[in-house]
Length: 191
Image (cartoon, rainbow, N blue to C red):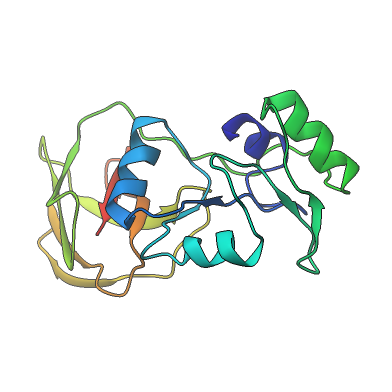
């Protein structure tokens, strides 16, 4: 599913991928996505209304891969087996256009900053190491879309406190730009 999501532009083209769980919580879905490196959006059954989608579309078995048209009609009831090739063929026959992901933001491998707590509920503390001064930062969702400018509660140059209370639960990337010109990207979870 991840490969097909990337083949159709990471939700930036005319195809939108969404993992819809049946019967689990947001925490369980986040854990699954983390373990299996899922980057497309996911909705839990119990807290994300995934159960309603299963009922509305009469989806009997899980996992199921269904292609739904913009008018909410079903183009393909069940893609089986759900191989990348079968997914791409089914979505293409329904009018999906393959394209490269416009933006792919990955976590950098350096350790110039720490994030605490992670997962975060209301306030994310970002601390820079090795005498780095934080010049600016930006937060993205996992598709690379820029999130609105978050409120900064505190800034001491090498430490900022970001208010995440208005964020929806899920995975995010924070890109920190230092006065030295270096950039660091880290993943965090909003619970």
